[in-house]
Length: 269
Image (cartoon, rainbow, N blue to C red; front, side, top):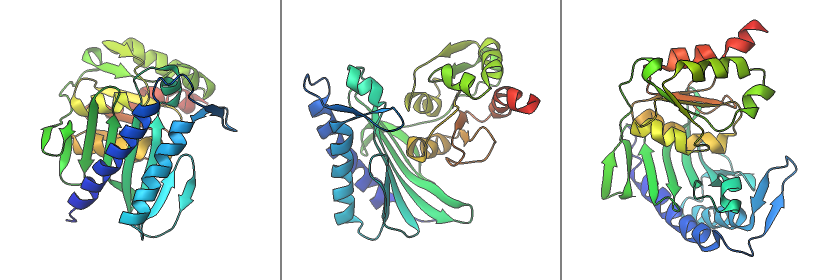
């Protein structure tokens, strides 16, 4: 099995640099925010963090390709770094501390590109999570000060905690009835949003989560963390990995029921 220790260490170095840049501008009164063509916000901090990560990768891994939310694809080959400089920009620009830099390394294989390293760093929360293929998932302050992650053992929806980002996306895609039925079937529901529900699944504090529309940079890093923590990460279509344009994550025990509920509307259409 390939050893990704050096790549993981590099991802932590990249996250350290991004954390310093994003925290420097967090809650700044003069933060510059623009609206992208898809009507989502992008701040100067998003751009600066991605430029910083790209610059370090170009020096440390010049043969690797890079895909980032703000500046697209650069390079080609069997290894690709996937970056979301600030996942949760709407929170960031409003001063809400729930946002993170997502850094993943994907490698080409028999089933296409799959994540093999992921770091999720949320400096305003004082939290970081990471994983490498075959090495498990961890949380802590550093590689040397870490706690191994493991998903929950909850096996019944009536005992399960379900996390999501918003309701409107499910309605827009004709999946609202199934979504609402799922919330009624669960013990507890909370809209933590963005990267955080997936990290809670990996920690075992949440049992299932899902989102109806996502990009690869939203998913690559969180997918490997969930998987290495013993969980299951698929699209709503059941395809494993971060390639379906949407996501469902669970402790594995509840995954079939999760997908069944969320596919109710599309099955009836």
